[in-house]
Image (cartoon, rainbow, N blue to C red; front, side, top):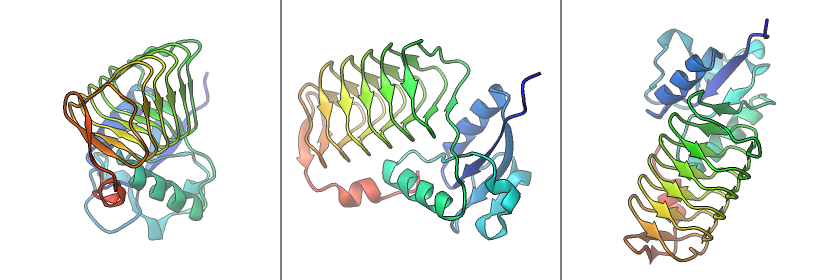
Length: 221
C-alpha cells in the first residue's frame, strides 16, 4: 500500500484554489489545512480545513505546502511567507488527467491543472503554475514562478523568464523568448521576442508598457 500523502494549501484568497483542491482529490492527496495567511475572504471549498496563520501548528508545518495563487508576484510573496513561518518543503501537483512525457521535468511547488497537453523534453522550474487546457510545446523552458493562463498555446523551444505571465488564450509562436516579469495579455499572439518587464497586447502582440511593477504586483489571484 502506498503511503498516505498529506499537504497544506498556503493562501486561500484566490478563486483558483478550488481547482487545486479538485486536483488533490483526484490524485488521492489529503488536504490537511488551508492557511489564511492574511486578512480577507477564503475560497477554500472544505471550510472545516480553514486555519488562520496565527493558529498554525507545528504539526502542520511538517507537511509540504502548495501556493494556489496565479499571479507570479503574489505566489512569490506567499512562498516567502510560508518559509518564514517554518514550512520547509513544497509539493508538486500535476492533475491526474494530464499525461506527462518521460523527458518532461517540473520543479518543486509546481502545479499543472486539468486538461493540459505537455510537450516532451520541456523543463519547468520551481513554482510554475499552468492553468486549465494549456498546450505546451516540446523543449520549452519555463523559469521560476511563471504563470500560464487557461487555453494558452506555447510553442516549441520557447523560453519564458522568471515571474512572467501568459494570459488566457494567448499564443506564443515557437522559438520566441518572453522576458522576466513580462505579461502577455489575454488572446495576444506573440510573433517576436518580448523584453523583460513589458506588457504586450494584440495580434501581433506589441509592447504597450515597459514599466510593469504595479501591474504584475496587483491583485490577489
